[in-house]
Amino acid sequence: MTAPTKKQMQGESSRELILDATERLMATRGYAATSISDIRKACGLPPSSIYWHFGSKEGVLAAVMERGAQRFFAAIPTSEDADGQLAVLSRLQAQHPDFLRLFYMLSLERGNDPAIAAVIRRVRDTAIRRFRDAIAGLLPPGTPPSKADRVVTELTAFAVALSDGVFFADHLEPEATDVDRMYRRLLQALTALIPVLLEEQ
Image 1 (tube, rainbow, N blue to C red):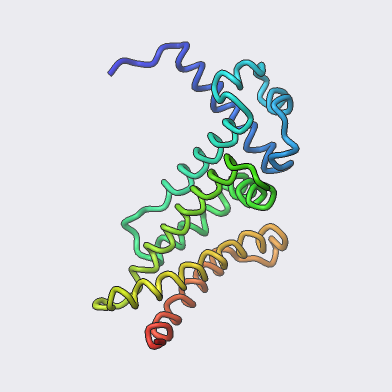
Image 2: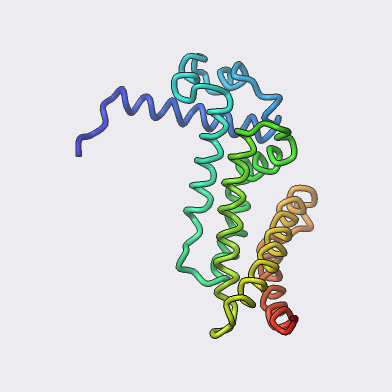
């Protein structure tokens, strides 16, 4: 394996500068209010560099979201039990505020832009899949597959909705929001609800 050339290293460095600047700007201003000119000023690189790396503003956004999602979800160990996965999620919320803020802003403002909608959907699907895997591990062994699927689907929707709420609570009332404690309560709620839902027809 050959070492990267100086030009390749400079190219990767400029790419990361553009992504960092775009993530900060869009997390603060939103997608619609952030222009290529704004990104240029924030990263200190010419527009030609931005277009060379990403092709368009939509291309920059897609790369920002894909990078953020990879970093976010790569930090969640798939081998952990539900307790461990939810604990990691609570820490990630504090470690990646710009990515999450941008995700929620785009979810609200995306309108009819199919490129933005596709990025949002990919990130959301990954989050749902991770919650689903963690919750499935809480079910007692031998649960019939059809019943397990129904319970996991309902509890996943519940857990994702509460996780969204924890982010906004932390953003709106940071002094009164203990994120770690809320995720522990979420796990307790999920564990308590499982036998209730398994009893339902």
